[in-house]
Amino acid sequence: MSAKQRHQLADRHGPQHGPQMDLFEATNVLREPARADELPATARELVRMIGLDATIQLVQMFGGDELVMPQKVRGTSRLWDLLVEVIGEHAATRLVDETAGTRLYVPTCQAALLSERNREIARAYDAGEHFDAIRRRYKVSRRHLWRLLKKG
View 1 (cartoon, one colour):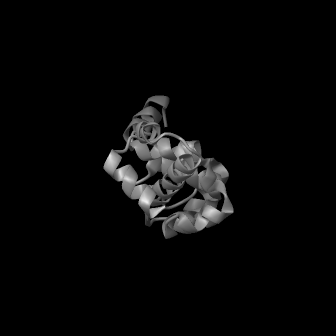
View 2 (cartoon, rainbow, N blue to C red):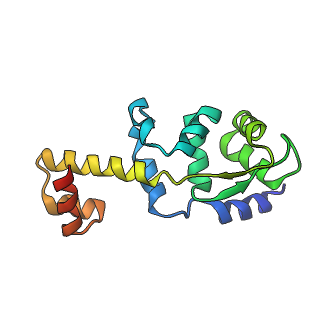
View 3 (cartoon, one colour):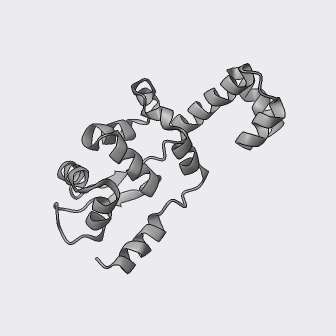
């Protein structure tokens, strides 16, 4: 695959999936084992197959997409080349070995990320941070912030 083709694929499946990816980057706390139960079942299965770091990279690149997995490892598939580039050859090999020829949905993990964001908001408010400062930082309305704080 040429560099131009890789960039075209990356442009199509790149990090333009919206604000959830910014949140994913900012929320490294999801790497803690205690947070693993908040991940969707599909993400937990991916973690089992390829590890947490590779899963995070896969979600960042393909979150919300359904991938038609290559039939074989080290084949001529464009997706194989992109998987190797995104998650590494070892993880790509394990993923294709277990999912060859199937459709694999890559979750966005948005619910887990929003849950962590909401905990961060509650911690900031409990620490005495000003309500409007929190609202602006997390880009939520006053009404929504009050709802989050009431739940917390």
